[in-house]
Image 1 (tube, rainbow, N blue to C red):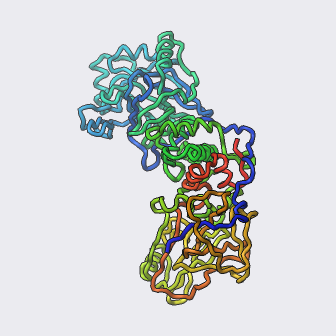
Image 2 (cartoon, rainbow, N blue to C red):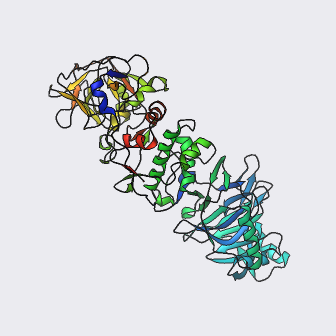
Amino acid sequence: MKLRIKKLIAAAAAAVLLLSGMPVTASAYTPSYTTVKIGLYYGSNAKVSANLQNAVGAGYLFGYYNANRKFVSVGAYTTTAQISVLKDYTMYYDGSNNTYEVGSSGSIVVGCYHIQLNSAYSNYNAAKTVADQYADGFVKFYNSKFYVCIGSYTSYSAASSAISSRGIGSCDVNSGTSYTVTVVETKTGKILFEYDCGTSSSLGILPATPAMISTAKTAAANGTYGSQNYAVSNGCTTWFRGYKYYGGFQYTRLNGGDLTVVNFVDIEDYVKGVIPYEMSPSWPLEALKAQAVCARSYVASHYNAHSSSGFDLCTTEDCQVYYGTNSATTTSDSAVTGTKGKYLLYNGSPCEAYFASSDGGATENSENVWVAAVPYIRGVIDPYEADIADSVSGYYFTITFSQSEITSRLQSWGYSCGTIVSMHVSTYTPTGNVYALTLKDANGKTFTFEKEDAKFIVRASSLHFTVNNEPIKTAAGGSATVYVNDASSQLTITDPTKVYAQGSSGSSVLGSGSIYVIDGTGAKTTLPMSGTTGSTSLIPTNYTGNASSFVINGSGNGHNLGMSQWGAYSMAKYHSKTYDEILKFYYTGVTIG
């Protein structure tokens, strides 16, 4: 039988569910950086080439990003809307995929051997003036000096022959280093710029507004352009591999390999690219605002989390899902602007604001799921999911294992076991989630899985589940405590086996005479016993030993830590809660500032 979320008609107890007071607002928090670095492609997914196309903008400035994450122009620019960045290999253009690949088989080939004039220049304009004398000339920025390069050849001998046939003096053949990157017009292969500063800096590209390009042209003509600093937020957007991004880009050949591509983006623009992928942009505004504060706080607490690859966060669920502005809406963007500069704080520092799709009826203490005890990630009974539980696809789950199936699963995990003949939840947490799951084989050998391992071993969607619908009681057989809102709001139960509940007729809201409780046992009319800490852990009341099969009944989807997204939806839509009230319900002792 599925876990059920019930309503208990008890006016005297309803008050314990009311959120106490207004949220405490901290003084404004200033993050270490307003620009964040998001790894788009790296490691095994690094690219041999990467295309950019202006969505809003008039071209690009070339330079690098300094230690303060500001873009530093070296004076180079282009008004070409479609450019490709290549590692300095011989590459050909694959028109069917609109990409450059390693090789020389195509009709458009960019060779990695060039004729390089011996003179070095201190500014881009001086080098460009010389390069413009050649139809295939371009400027290379190498270790803070500018050089003029000519041509694009697929071999050293071809470049050497061209020196003689073209009558070019005071030059040599150059093929760059393992850190060189080349910028070309996407569909013509014309080289626009090359960059190589070894490991000291990487090529930065900033999409530019018409005004920025106009200034660049004028300054270059006057020989005065170069080394200006720019913030990455200028209103431009750029297409990159099917997604549209704010901000600029950095290209690094780590250890001489393929291109690591990093999006340098203002933190507010970054959050605009998170919200529509972590929460539906059609959801209530206050829920979206809560998600925006979580996303902003998470990145602020994870600067340089991927420092070995040169960025803060990735684009997947390992960090936060981020795919630029494609799915952003007026509503999702307004959730970001409506909370601009707001962070979830604990003792003045940004929180690692973990969140999950749903908690099944109760969140959990961090140490009961992972390892460390995080003071603001404390388990709470979640009454708000009651309003959405029956309408959310996959909210309830049932998984059945035969003895042979669960035995095979343990063995695939590397455990040496005989046929598994029994399984039961050996410890519940105070909020009614699974803490420990114990299995026994036919030889009497036991295997206990704790925390998230208990979930993974049975493929449960959350830690809110039971095995074979076993009722639970306290280990001591005495009274238990039902945690209604938090550890200070409790109902003490003298009979530890059951508290009976009935559904409320019609629609009811918190504070109107009904409170929500969770059926953690799977029975339709019982409330789970939530034991106090220490020796009064919860155990099944009717655990009798062996079973021929094992049925896992549960609810929720995620790690049970921090904010429930569906709970936030319910709080905003059905209970008129504001984003700060939502956050203070799910995170303990936090402020917003």
